[in-house]
Length: 191
Length: 114
Image 1 (cartoon, rainbow over the protein chains, first blue to last red):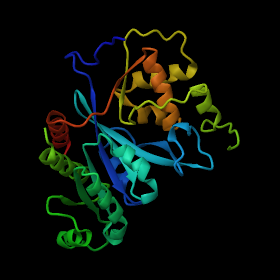
Image 2 (cartoon, one colour):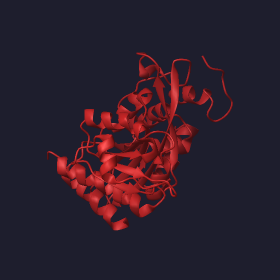
Image 3 (cartoon, rainbow over the protein chains, first blue to last red):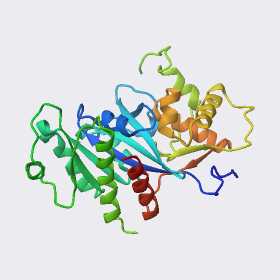
């Protein structure tokens, strides 16, 4: 099978992927929307309950659940499109999250300072998968600001992991949070 | 078995898409689906033509974007996309472990929009 390259230079467009991981309602879709060049879209992934083969599940049934995934995209270079995927940061969605992590350049763990414990599983997961990551603290307007050192302490985040204060609605802060992920990925890249 | 739905999200469509075939070859939801220039659309199902329109209208559409716009669950959209790859209509660019070049381009692109 032959095909014409998409670009006059002969290079093909490549995907890059960052996963935004966090519990429900923490602001993942908002953050993706603040960066994405398209409105965030949602797609459904099927997850089988038990050890059932995921290949056989085409539709939801009593052994499967659908997981809605929000995502967006940003063309960062003529030949690179960055895809941003929101992933639910709960244990029960682990198979879907693991799928999304495959090939991701890094993860942004989104944290609500008023609900820090909900982030523990996310941080355990990215540590276990040794994937480059940064933490973004999404403070709601009107709530007290927590000192970064306290957050780092409470979450047991090592000094090599950036912690960024953001408002998920703000484009600039969202981009800075993603840059923190890419910086970590560059630092940790073996090539 | 769930009941047969009549909405676009009902169970009927995924089976129509796959025609009983069920092989899930790897195709990441972030993989890009590039239309092959010059591929003839005769013989495509209406779903296939719909998918080609989505992949052609957008620039470098991912599997996830195709699934969302065509309103199919990811697993069904994956089979549809792979069928179109096999028939020579789409060329996939797979997600690979990132290299320094890719990371630098992402970094530069993000810095430009900060």
